Structures are given as C-alpha cells and as structure tokens.
Image 1 (cartoon, one colour):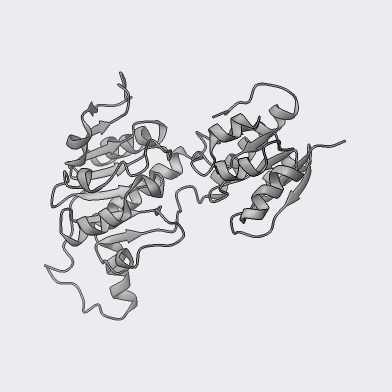
Image 2: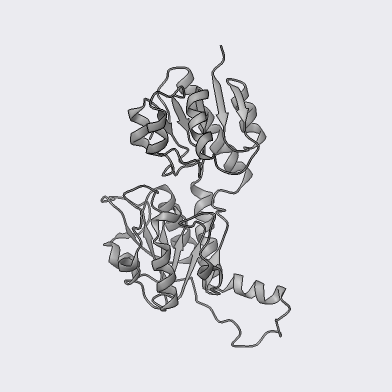
Length: 317
C-alpha cells in the first residue's frame, strides 16, 4: 500500500508532482494554517505530513494524539518553531526542515529592508501614489547612507553570513556580529562582539532561528542599546522580537526606524507599526521566489522519500 501524505498548503506544481510519484497525496487548497481539529486529524489519518509556518503542532496536539499514525513532519521552511520537536520525538515523530535553499533569497530581503528604511522608499512611494509629491528639492525626504556604515548581525549562520557578504562586499560596510557560539571564520572580514555591542551598530539585522531559546531575544533591554540613528531589521521569526517593546522604542526615538518581514502575531500586525512612516513592512516575503519555494519543496520531499526508504533523514532537526 502506498504511504499517505498530507500537504497542508498549496505548493509549486513541481513539488506536488514529485510528491505524487512516491505518495498517495492529499493536498489542501486552503492557504490558511491547519485548525486545531485538523492538526490532530493529520497525525491520526496520514502516514506523513508536509506542514509549514503556522501549522502549530504544539505539545497539546501531541498530547491528544499520543500514538500518531504519522511518523514524520517534513516541514516546508527552515524555521520550525511552530512544531514542538521534543513532543514530536516523544511520540516517535521525526521532524525535518529545508535549510540552505532559503539563504540567498532571505538575505536579499534583509538588504531590501535596510535600503528601503534608510532611504525612506516606502514613505516616498506612499506620498507619490497619494498625489502629494510637489517635485524635487534639495531637502526632500533626506534619509541615511548605507554605504560605509556598520552593520551588526545577530546570528551568523548561513543567512547571517550571506547578509554580511552583501553588506561588506556590496556596500563597503564594517561587519560586526553576535553569535551564540564562537565562530572561528565568518568567511569575510567580520568581528564577533557581545550582543550589546552589535545592537549599537548603525544597522542591526536579526537572523537567528526561531525557538524557545530565542523568543524575545530582542526586547526592551536590548533595544535600549541601539543608537538613536540606528535602523533595526528582522528577517528571522516574529517572536524573536518583543513587538510591544519595539513599538515603544520607535515611539520614544530610541532608534530611527525598522524594517520587518515577520511579526510576533503573524498575520496580525500592530496597528501602531502600521501607522509609523519610519517603518518598512513586508508580508513575509523572505523566500517568495518561485525557484526558492520549489527548491524548498523538493528538499522536503527528499526528506520524505528518505524516511519512506528507511534511510537517514538529510535534514533532521
């Protein structure tokens, strides 16, 4: 009998086609995350599940299904903080992710946010579309230079290093970084520093994985270390940042601006952030490139096929 697979969200056609070659696939057409009852049904009714961001396989879900039929959650995405991996392991469920495929696209969005916020691009476009532009003049919408400034990168993994390369080699920026463990070679001129020092850079970019250990890593205390002209960028996971603390810091001018691609209560965004002209807001576009999403999906399928064949999982977490 062919193993059954639930794909929880629409994926690129090439990914679904690859999955159907080896599995009896049920592919949800809804773009919304699985509801509470559907999460439990997924574990009971399928041999394998390909979930993604927002499909919250929490400890409560596993407690309700202590002996699941599903033996693998092949997550679509590098971040897996929506899955309680300890609870999954205790129930005999393997969890995999899709690292590597997302690196360059996510790094590109980090630079997009840096540039848009520093040069007030979102604010300028809104003004122009509203018919409020009166023409060029010497002091119109003066922003900040990016070239030659210092960037502090929080989390110097694959994505952090890709951001660092773009900043240093593309914009001549000085790179400092904070990492939870010592990094002997960052692959480019860069200096490892304490978190407080990295937070004081001209630009601060957060690129840590989402996990209980990194939840609210950026909070009122860490934001207080920023320079008044500093620009904060988050392309990691929303709950890495205490969003209320960020709103307060922006309101109090502890920092000059922020660029966000992820949010603590996604898809809900703080109304205060929505009303701030010095904040660039993107709808979680980090990996939103067809080639990247296809590569992510094929990596998830490769994890599933390895499980099916009893081989070591390429990207087990």
